[in-house]
Image (cartoon, rainbow over all chains, first blue to last red; front, side, top):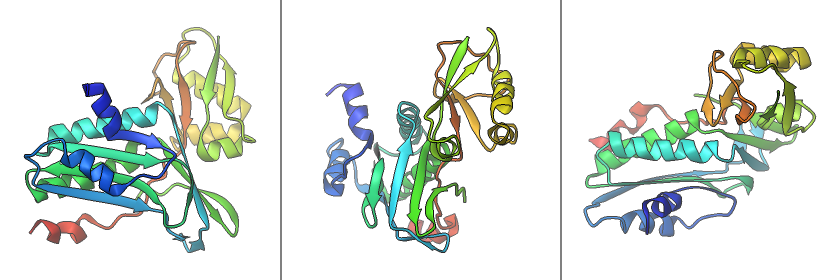
Length: 147
Length: 97
């Protein structure tokens, strides 16, 4: 598999759901040096800002979103003592309880994997052009949180 | 030249579900000129741009007001990204002990 193919499988924005096991194995299979894998899974919840939410729609900027996710992966590999990073985000309509975003980080040791995983999801939310629209009893609401 | 500006999220909703704006500009214009042109087309969106509540990206990078524009550039207006609530870092500190 070429570097480009590898990166394409490890950084994805896609409509369809994903298998957490398959994605973890994608990272696990990158190196036998991996001794710890940290994951973050974001799922669609039914409550937001004191409002019921019945469905979420994600919109993204094609091209720029993938570029930013690639940059996050590259920086994580550079700045943390980790072996592999996978970043995956869904777009389109997502029902309550479904998967939204997955970060998988493989490292020799757990502390590095946890740290990099936390950094990746925080950075994703800061710099990746993805927008969330929640369907509420009051209508559709675009979310602009930046905690 | 006429530049095409992509719209996303709440901006698209605000502008009657249009996915892009066509903005006439002089050759050699900068992002600040684009913002002024948009201000004259839609004061509400212009104000958000001036307050930096909405960012401008040029060729997939966030651009400052001095960035010069070419007709071939891919330009977009970026409303705030969705973000999301996360616990303070201290709550995760035990994980590392």
